[in-house]
Image (cartoon, rainbow over all chains, first blue to last red; front, top):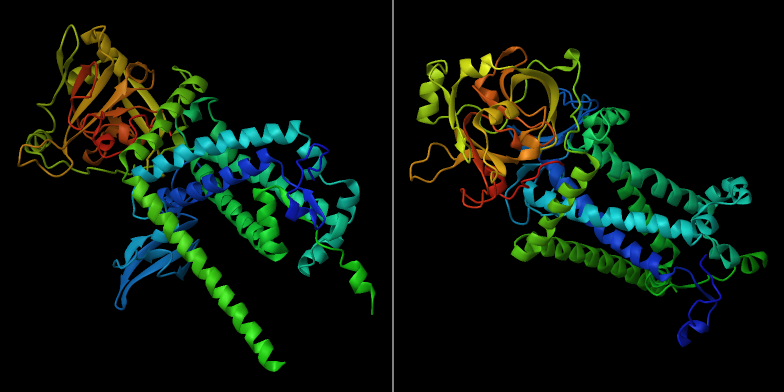
Length: 288
Length: 268
């Protein structure tokens, strides 16, 4: 953790319990910029996706056989929304394929109004949102990478030690039991946490950016054929979408963990930097 | 004891409801906020400033002459998807189409030393370029097709643009809101800068997949600007004009979709 001799003095109220200065200001700032960017990027991305709600593998679109598509169709019982994966179709009326905005009549759209920015189907505006926040997101991401390397945050906090890797089995069991580290162990990211962060920082985030850039016809010309390394432009669109949902999955688990671990303590640590160390459970449990 | 446990559970349930309510309220407030911002002119102008940044960055990393990927003949799809206008209903177009485009003339003018009118035969007689390239629609889909046509740079060399010319404007036959009745022009138009106009792969295509360009894909002549999105590839080209600025033309944004809010620079 970022415990430093130079850390500011904790406020009076904080001094009572054992607290550590867990997140330094740049990390906190970049974290919240990321929250805004990822929210807008995901939601405007879904609006863009709605303009052609089907995904393919390869260089071009095989319109008759997307690997996943969303749509609406009329039936004797009224319109239904569907999600089709390969040859299997699921009825997803109300959410995917067919949904209504507040008070509006049902409308054919892949992702519903509550999940997109803007809420109405508006490709041009969604693109403006997406590309503006993509720039902030990328600049913020590069700033984070530089900071995390040069402040040694990466080496000290994010890369797991050999011991931690050896005991990964125990960490998995603890997670399954929703048992969170206490005492000194709680001052470090646990091994599953650091591995997840590393996968997100060096896997999903670069993938979502590179696959996004691969969809640009101009950037495709930087090195002729580089988009084929991702399987072609339509594969890149698929990977961009999947990486986006991978990030969404990460955010969902991340937020659930924040609630499980104690929402006020976690939120305070990401706003003020100060984190209260949960007392050691071991002593209590040792007594019969 | 039982009662207090019941109360505790009820309180937990209340808290959960409260939390769920708060999340839903925050979510709809966020959405309403984003929708309101999308109507705010200065906010949208700020969002749109990213276009200039993207254009500058893309020109920096992908130089002026960088080539779009070309593919093998086995990659070509037989039915090339068409989008936008599928068959113009404008009277002048219908008349030309019914006569097999025999009377078609491409007019090239504006800020040029030697305005010209070219028939399809004249265009076909000029040196041609054939390229198998990928068409990327702003909606997200892609199609690979084999295009044959005359390089725009050859046409420009013919008419000799004046030094003050900065953009090449394409005027098309198809009215987007149907044939115009009230005199308001909704004919498709597009514009590109001179870098793209002089690019090797920028052609006026008359053939698609070894056949004369079908009506649904822009017959008799369409533009191919291979390093930008589909809406820049003007179909049914009627006239080419060299201009210093497109501020005074229709919506002033340089193209039909640009006037509807899309980016003029469609490199991503």
